[in-house]
Figure 1: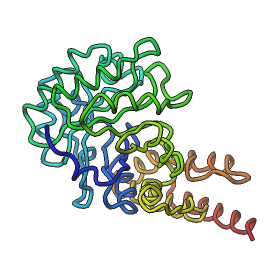
Figure 2 (figure 1 turned 45 degrees about the vertical axis):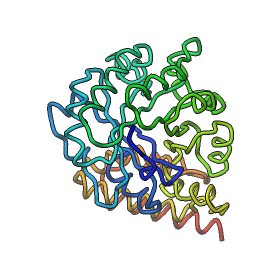
Figure 3 (figure 1 turned 90 degrees about the horizontal axis):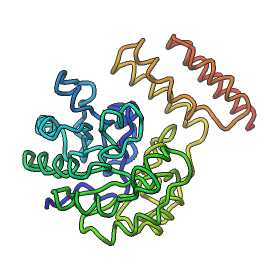
Figure 4 (figure 1 turned 90 degrees about the vertical axis):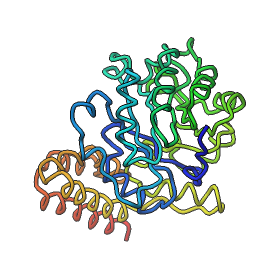
Length: 323
């Protein structure tokens, strides 16, 4: 068993989100939070075997500690990809929790919870071929009648996993309903490796409540950071120093949206960068009258200068209303 304590010195980590936690968003989170464990978006082992995608593996020196997440169901293929990613990663994470249909139909993600023998073989094979820590992310089970997360976690530990992140929903719930943090406490009591709880942690107060109910070693924050890359830092300050830092103001959110767009354009080129960033506008532009109208303008605009004009107009109008 490999010691991962130096990688989780912060009790808050960035949860992986496919098509979301790219190099740019990870960099935005790191700007605020220098010590949290970052995790990449899900990387398909099948795709990585065919094309060594530099955009998905990109990182800066200050991105450590960082975990690269792989998906798949072919043990040797995943192991080969993990071995290749060692040059970038401080940890390898195996995705056994993604609930999306196209992933599950390929017997990847949450589908592996229905095949613990294969899941165990994957972990053993990967562990035998890498020299860095290995983690697994999974859910409570596939359905409410198949909550095998405790036994599954034990088997992952026995197979060689050094760290667990568990989303407190079943696969059938997808992202609906409420995450059941209390169930995680049973897993924590039955494994010896660190456990981070995931699901519905979108504020410092909820992070503290999650830790209380789950008895986990830390929390993994996913969707909560959308529109607020400072959230992990704010949670960390609250947990460690009892200091409450207010959520970002509309002015701060608009400035971050601008920076996010510019960095994506630099990274992907103007056309692709603008299109990629559209998914983030609903999180940056909300909470004020007329927000939906502006979001509609932003997601259909294909010109950087015009997008900045719209964002400046939002900033001007919301500031005028405040005063």
